[in-house]
Image 1 (cartoon, rainbow, N blue to C red):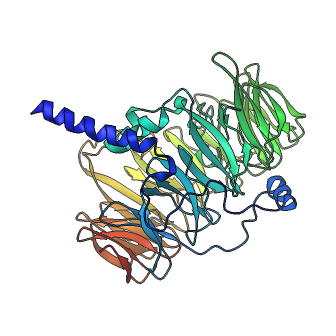
Image 2 (image 1 turned 45 degrees about the vertical axis):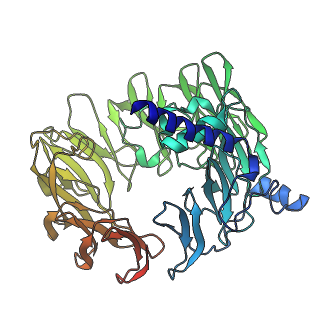
Image 3 (image 1 turned 30 degrees about the vertical axis):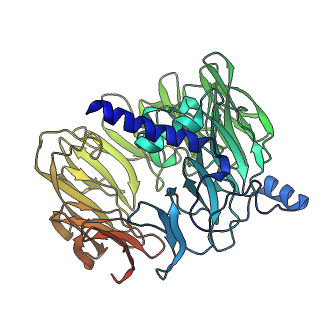
Length: 508
């Protein structure tokens, strides 16, 4: 039996291999063609503007929503639920700046909102467009990419064949013009090196923006010698404007970038001039005009001119939010909050084991295994009582408790160690701790445009911020609302609903 199975699999693979060398002669869905060149070319002047200034994203693009049919093919509908791009693609991504990455067989390309004028399907992977530019991947030449990717497609286990080291990155504009050719850099606009101290200083919302270009520049990494990567910056024409001489870098932010050289951090401007010389163990992102820094084991704050506004005298620090920053005077003291001049506004009791940044006038604290909240005077306005708690937004916050599972966990970050075997009840409270929604849901949120997805008894629905139902839990699965529609699953079929709960499209 095994012999015949192997022969059958082998024959299938041979068929796939033969297709891989058929080029554009392979069978394509009806109406789909693969252009050998980009379908439209801008004038030289438009090219110059696009490359120097970025693609104009101010033009309103029609909304498109991903659908799939019973054959596993993907297409798009519009706001009314009409199929505007037939489900003929093997994979698709959401539209960005009027173009969506789509996959046919084993190659990615781009389509527009009318399924026209798309770029050739020639990429190993295709990213979203940002300011008229997208990052794409090619397979390295030493890989027989067509053969292996066909095997990947057949087995649906591509992660076992390829790693990030098997790809080369390039940047293209919306017309397919190559701005940065493959093989030029090891990293473009992202790197495997994690930002130092991000988790320690709770800078997650202040860290890398996710954009390729910031302030018109993107960081790139190049292997100078074996196992040694140095970083610099390119502009939107692909020109290297800041040489790859830095050990690590962060994206530009308001004309400034934190860079690391000789194991120390400093700050440069877009002209590659030192604003802050590299003599710090750490420099954080700017928030409210100030950046946390560490020098000689102590923390302080500097402004965008590199001037030290608050001397390094704290054993711990955090970024500014709503005019306050959390610090520690020394390792044995409790937490204090300072203003932007460095004056202590209030100090907390040493029994408060964790205190965080302010959001919507409240800061989350932890005592033991329970979370609560303080106001901007340092008063505990919601006593620590929740095992799970988020940050306040628009006057409400999601809180919860473990009702089944390991209730002895000490959640340093309340959502970092959740177990699939644990069960939870979530509710909503206001800024005074009053319940808007009692703790009864298996999951809530996040709120997007005033609507949050909830799960109750294994079914999904939607609530408003006042706790009332938009749609009672009835779906087997559901996504958050986006551009007025939400994707749900009902009776085994995919569907889209609007904010009234009306089905605008359903899988046949």
